[in-house]
Image (cartoon, rainbow, N blue to C red; front, side, top):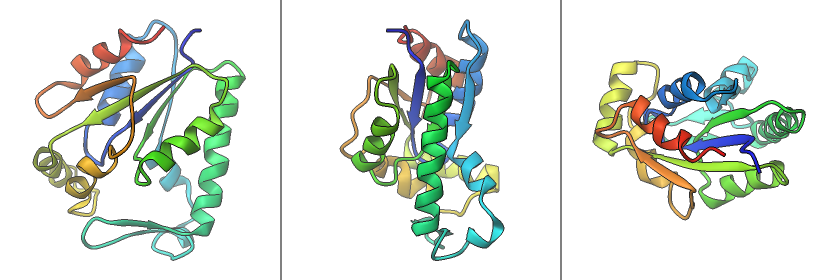
Length: 177
């Protein structure tokens, strides 16, 4: 079965977005890309910093409330619907819930050919990228570097600690049917 969806999971500042852009360039067919940052940016301002929505803690922790979860479920189903309608889709996510986060995507993507990708990066390297970006709460990258991978299995894993995005994208593309 031809791969219809590629799901990348990695902590903040692990290099997922760069890999996604490279995948879109090197894969022969057009692929749409959707990331958790796109979803968070699409939320109403009143849900940012709200117990009902999403809160970024001073230590880099992330808390989500019921309205965030409901909209996230709709977002996930919408992406799955695009793949079912024939679009090839790359998802850039952060599995803060570990295996439960993957299971949420597995339910939504049931019946589709999915390539599961773990994007790893040393916490100290990701923390340096986080500072350079300037758009993240400090501590998020280090706290998520290992957490998001605990109990999660993958078809392929890449490590951006010492590898360029293009090299990682090539390793992933080699696994796309």
